[in-house]
Image 1 (tube, rainbow, N blue to C red):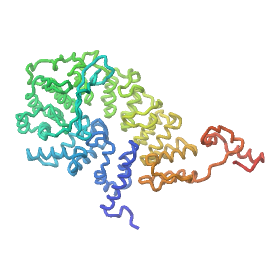
Image 2 (image 1 turned 90 degrees about the horizontal axis):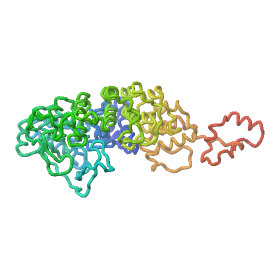
Image 3 (image 1 turned 30 degrees about the horizontal axis):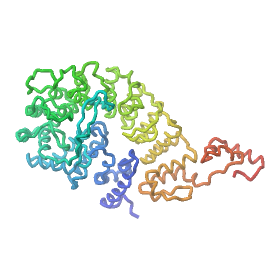
Image 4 (image 1 turned 90 degrees about the vertical axis):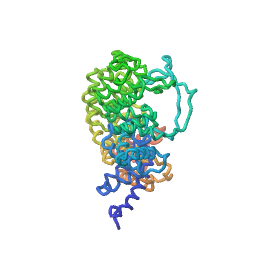
Length: 588
């Protein structure tokens, strides 16, 4: 018989492709794609063979919330260990091969690269590589999002008595009476100007500017030219773009970004994300203004900017997108002292914990005196739980070991804290226990570290242990599952429930039978799980359950399963007493 590793590479890749497709159909959000990626760990031959399979299978699109398959709503290259290189190869592959313009933005990205290469004679492969890094870095925070070309426009006005509140804009009211839906058309020359600004191509940029293209606009494929110039660190290009803009021009629309100005949110956002203080200063105070030495920022004076003003809005937006401490301090100094927190500290802390920016968080907590407020303030996204809980939970979920150590050891956050509730944005499951989050992240080392630092698996009774064990099964992390079994020995009732829970994502395929052992071998992708459960519990669950002695028959009749009572009984003593009494013929 031929071993699977001896098959021709083409046949093996076809087999692995079908396996990946089965794995990715799982409805558990923390499982999607990860089980396919774990195929790389089977053996060296699989690791060398599976890369084209993962690219072809669209494994990343089962985890995405944006059009390019980036895993979350923050730039993927800011905090994901190693995933940036895989995502780059993934997007490059589909940008070169995709033919369906309605599937992602790959076709539009390729056309933009081809248009730029046709104008400049640049190498297409190099251009696509650079474009992909650009969208992975910046596209995840809108302009890269796309559903299906349909967009809506609406207007909004400030109202301090409104019940609506946005942490960035402040109180506001949406006026949907002017909303319209339209099918957006992609103008390639706008992308050309963005590319020229990013690659520092002055002849092309000057020609497009002379044709009337605005450097503050974009068509939701690449960021605006002002942003790409600042993000690329091209100071002279940014000054050129600023020279073609007025000091300020209101376009007559009430939407917040419907204006043109030398001081624009797009250039400030690109400079803040780059973490370049000189570029931030250039974005805030362009030398081509009518008053180049003025410290005014639009209609506000720097140092006393109103957080609810237009300038205050995009400064706060830039603050949330910077990872550099010096840039953060400079941007915060634009506000009055009493306005510098303005409800942003929780969000700043939260975002940088997700990014794994430990040095930034350390300075924010200790130098700003935020440690005392850490457990008192509510987070904007979740009013029911405190920032310390949210931050530690996200650090665990994203496997930031250094951040977990910092929050526990230096900030004094207690990992044994038990809280309950689902956090729908990240789908952490039914229980909010830290052990559960570590199991869903697939990190056995973090799970052991949390237990050593005082975490518990007892949150919500057995629910936390149960959810963690099922997460380990779903990820096929059997070492973690065996370790969890050393912490708890569930009853027979729980074992049956765990077996059913392991099949929950595909329970519609399970045949209803009267057998004591659930039939699982026909489920695609679950053969390894069924073999593992058979190995640890198969013999026990195939045996008929023990019968109750008469003295226990009337105990807790309201229970659906009397095995909960059996767990509390010393059966050796009970059975011996029953035999000595001579009453009856044993347990019924």
